[in-house]
Image 1 (cartoon, rainbow, N blue to C red):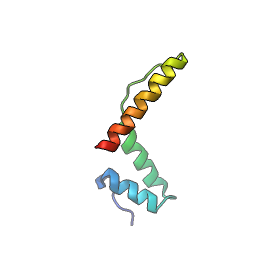
Image 2 (cartoon, rainbow, N blue to C red):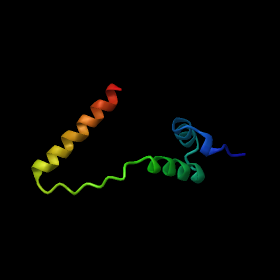
Image 3 (spheres, rainbow, N blue to C red):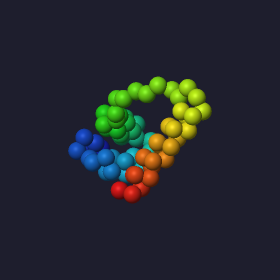
Length: 69
């Protein structure tokens, strides 16, 4: 009997998927859960090396913020 993926927390669902990597139903539930919470903002592609570096700096900043929390 499969667990109820809807009632699992994100962490529980991820842990289940790690333990059951071939469970497609769990995978789809995982992707649905994470994409439904994702930002729908769309950004233009960087057009210069300066813009590419600005994007890289923003990504590094977000990673450091995530590590600190």
